[in-house]
Image 1: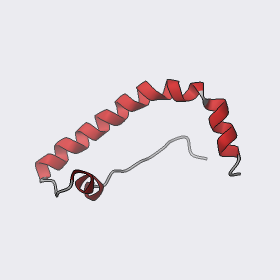
Image 2: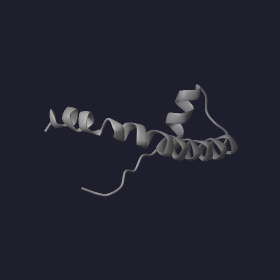
Image 3: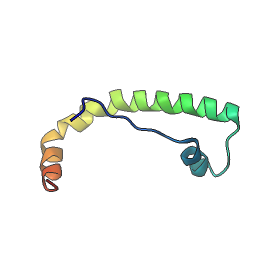
Length: 64
């Protein structure tokens, strides 16, 4: 098991989500905003998720 999580948003995924193709500048700005949002979400939500870790492990174990 690796000690990291990688997740990629593609330009197409973001374009599909907003309903149109992004310009190069829009994509540059949106990519930066997505990185910031992930950082914010990580530090805001990880402690909350960890309070449910026993339940989450139990649920995940059902698929082992």
